[in-house]
Length: 231
Image 1 (cartoon, rainbow, N blue to C red):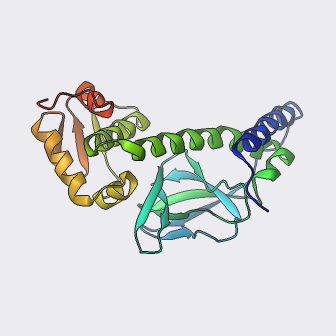
Image 2 (image 1 turned 180 degrees about the vertical axis):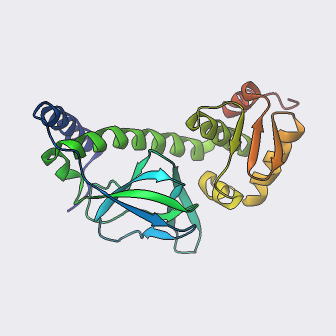
């Protein structure tokens, strides 16, 4: 079965939302899942594998990515506590999922997006998290499209701070190679850009994975390409 169009997906999600409301009004039972744990860098599922489950992150971090025929990796997204991943409109996973760190997940049985309308609790999960996923995918595509290295790295730092609801310090779970593969840059460019930000007083780097946001406003200007060359 081919994947539905974006318009069809939104129609299905709207129907799923209505189904969730009806289920709640009727006293529907919560969706049951089981807890699974993965060690750092463990493979959770592979691209092309049959979609048996989707997952909610309870602890740790997961990356979803695609491996090219030449061995290169493009990371699609990072999923942290509270995030859901593995929702697919078809019968196979379109991406590979791996544990960035040791992580704890709740696995929910899943047979495809079209099943959402038949289960109220699944409908609520699909509707909310699918919209979040679509928004992040769009933002990521726009970032990769024509942004400079400085814009990409600044946007990444601001995004991580916003997801943790802080403008102070951010502890990065992922390594710099992960960041590079997410932003479509080389690891050397990521490291050089972070060092430039540190010299400009935008951030401090007490360690390679601990980033102190000294000038959030200045970083925001870099996100939008409005920072001066001498800033």
